[in-house]
Image (tube, rainbow, N blue to C red):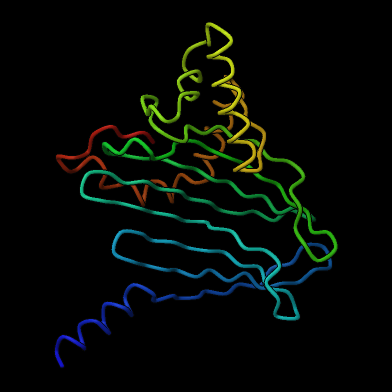
Length: 210
């Protein structure tokens, strides 16, 4: 009986979802924004859902994704702003630890509402999807050094194309990337500080990139 009770409590803790609702509007569209928090033993996820007056979900986006293990942690944070007919999302990725497949970067996406759906009208991203030395991601190293031959240029081009397709954004470089990261970090500075305040306190606080 005690063992059964333990499993029930464990399952509840893994799939527990707490929703928080707010009311918003874009032009004449009025809608509810629902934030659902999901926890399991090594992940924490917050999803944002936009629900119209017919109780239909017309937009869904992950605004927090935190994953950890004994030696590393990965964090994705987003927040939104509404300005007239535009919905803008600011997203930041950062990491610590020895896992090579944790991302670092920033993105700004702007949406407009059109015919019962939100469409991207502008999006820019700079992201390092893995560690620079991750062998299975050969193109990423050319974010840090210029490709020297056709083979290296193909690796780099393939990396950029795959990022733009997966993240539905235009990849930016150099000073544009620096400005993008600075703007997003400023928008999310309170959230970043809160979520990473203990990253420098422990012995495994190595290879931190914020």
